[in-house]
Amino acid sequence: MRKIFAATLLCTVLAASPGAAAQLEAPGGVGGCVFLGISREMRLATMAAYARGGPSAIGEVQNLRREIQEPARRCSDGGDINRDHALLAAFLSTVMKSTNALKLSRHGLAQARLDAVWAQAAQADKALFVAHAQSFFAGQPAPEFSDQGAAGLVDALALSPSTRAEAHRDVIHYFQAVAMNEMAEARLASKAGQ
Image (cartoon, rainbow, N blue to C red; front, side, top):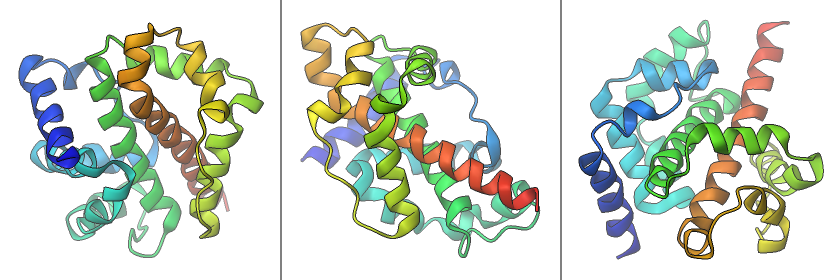
């Protein structure tokens, strides 16, 4: 039921506000290039697949590798999304970030505001999100997210109690995606500089 609701929510947000997707920040970096390199229909299908199950739907999104292989190769100077975890993570985190930004827009949370909170946050407030991203690259189980561990970033948004209750999970997923995206893009940049 939750998966159906999430996918319906994404469609509802897009239908109720046709310009909602246009208001998203254009994704940057290699992950953004891959994301923008696939058709609009594929972008929406990928976002809907993620929205149906949040992070647990990453496997479903990964099944789209064949469709994203050519844009991934083009955007990364020949990289193979089937072998390069940083390239895959850059794309997946862009999907996660864009989907959660779109879902959060219905609560009046602009992506620019979310990004500003992340940019201004202390490293201690980002620590749990960074550890989550590091676990992906290390092939280890992700650390458990606690309200206390995520409180610094969530509190910085100064949400009303009702918005906080409704948007909490999507805010956490957004910041998880930001941390993963930063780490993946840094790894790709390091490889390109070698």
